[in-house]
Image (cartoon, rainbow, N blue to C red; front, side, top):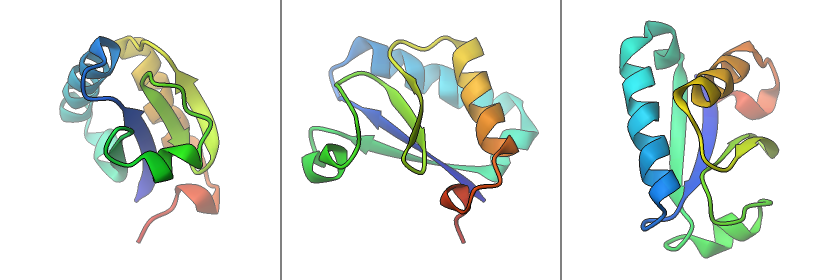
Amino acid sequence: MKKITLFVQQFCPYCIEALRWMDALYAENPAYKALEIEIIDEMRHPIIASKYDYYYVPTYYIGSEKLHEGAASPEIIRRVFDAALATDSPATQTK
């Protein structure tokens, strides 16, 4: 599986919206089932978040590469998912 890391904050309206769209896209496109999406709440895991270049809005990473930061539309999330599927970097691979 290929892995995307998504940082969110519990009370961030952009994060809540991004999670809803992400779930909808994940459910509607069978190809996205090849992605593992690790969601990290920055407030609960500040030590992990501090290792990334992350600033309190939804932020998507493949390995340590930032793909998108900020409010996300379904089109942006689709581009993130498609980029993750197209990446052959060992950082995207999980067992």
